[in-house]
Amino acid sequence: MRALVRGVAASFAAQALSMQPRAVPICLDAARQQHGAYVALLRRLLGDDSVLQLPADDAFPDCCFCEDAAVVVGDTAVVATIGAGPRQGEEAAVADTLAALGYRLRRLTPPATLDGGDVLQLPGSRHILVGFSRRTNAAALEQLQAALQPQGAVLHGVEVQHGLHLKSAMTALDGRTLLYADDAAGRSLRAALERGSHPALLDGAAGGGGGAGSKAVQHVMVEPAAANVLLLPGHVIMPAGLPRSQAVLQALADERGLQLHRLDFAEFAKADGSLTCASILLPPAL
Ligand code: CIR
Image 1 (cartoon, rainbow, N blue to C red):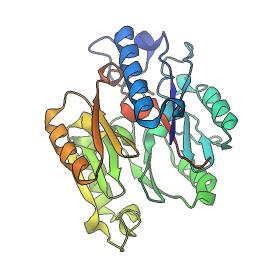
Image 2: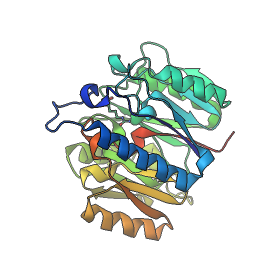
Image 3: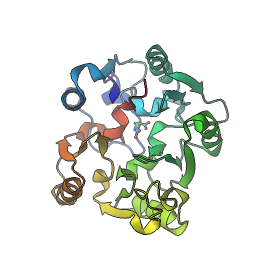
Image 4: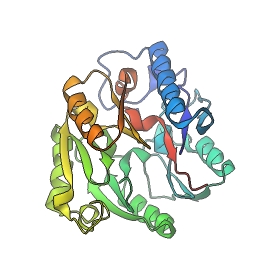
């Protein structure tokens, strides 16, 4: 697996978007240091040549959150129209890079808007959850489904009632272990998935085989910041400074043969960013 990352713009500290006025200012140096540690860890875990870094563009303060710019499944890269007006345009450099790497590009068209942060590919499964948030709409799900049809992907919409993105409050450790923020955002997502006997949790593809059904799915509540983990082959990365959730995740990681790592990503959290936002994982299809 490879990963695409993008540098931190000089404008990040002063101009990155956030849902609430920033209580504590962002320190650009600290952000760049934390980003450097993120890239270094990805290089260590994936291999030096497997991490591709796009330069930052100071015209786009949020460009380090490159996850939002495209969704990559198999050999197909679907270029987003990011749902925040000031961020539209970040997608171009990401799209060019993915095209140069050989991915088949598909592009969303109006009225679709989508942030990659709303797209959760359940690991080892054909199912993909798409959050309907203030950034991502139903037209995007429809177009994404059409673009990813050849990959056999099956998409499911989930309402994101609180917070920025689906993955701000939910990620997965594997196809049947779902992590949620233990707050209103995470609880409402869990309720939606449980209430609907969600198709993604029903057909056994997410249950690890055997038609295991929803009983096989483990719903795990963690401290809100720990609900976003970055899963790499054999490894899982969580934010530092959350000892209670670390104990929970360590036990889950051990059971699954995953090595747990911690990273300080606090400067990015001030701009509503989390670990998955800062990379696009590129499957080994190419
Ligand atoms: C934004 O509001 O768009 C950025 N400040 C944060 C984006 C975080 N991206 C992500 O969760 N995928």
